[in-house]
Length: 321
Image 1 (cartoon, one colour):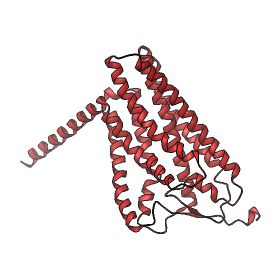
Image 2: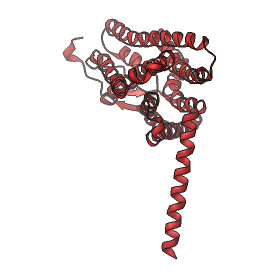
Image 3: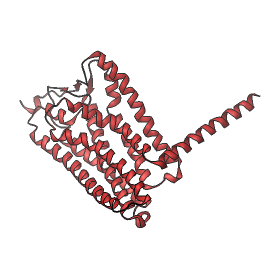
Image 4: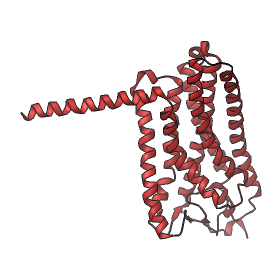
């Protein structure tokens, strides 16, 4: 078939998580609840870091940016998924599909780089504590945060460059709840071997490079921590455990999905949901439960809000009297 005879697909049909009406009703309530928790939990971390001057340090600035990325990572597809649970057919426009692919790789790529930056911050803090304030100054911290966003955008544009112009002329059913690039590419009316390989190399390079840098950083940090047994090192172990847990939760599903990127497994949807819904909700829980400074700042913020409310009620009462 000649290129000019293609009739371009204008929308894709998403099969979602299940075809069972009862399950979809359950998922509607369940994921609504989780999404609200994601937004509130991560928003609380951002507000806490902003409101507490003691947390205006590189580690917590990066943590607040991680919370922002987690909310965005959950938002690019979750509201659409929740809406689709109660609507048929589950369709998305071609432009909307490309937007989902772009946003997913911006936020996921940015989070990968930010996790590496956070590992570097912990490396400097634990392995070079006397030089920490000099090395991890505000300028360096800002550069790392901005750099994570820039690399995320570049990574996403490179993924989209060889996808958006592919001829989509017939099949338009995506067996997922969002536009998964590995599934969308297979729907093109042409030989997709080269785009598939390019996509795999691009994502693989990004993921493997980030993972190796994280692995090296944490091995060096763990060796340093194991050589010391002071109270400061005990605190470092606690912080390090939280970081490693978050890295495992983030990279685990990604590694599985991209090891067999063009084969369909039932658990693919489970890992996709885990990486875009459960990881963003677990991150604030992990960091707050294991971090005394954050818990203390949240308690202080709560006290300030309660006192402010009481003061407002007192003023209102005086005005009424």
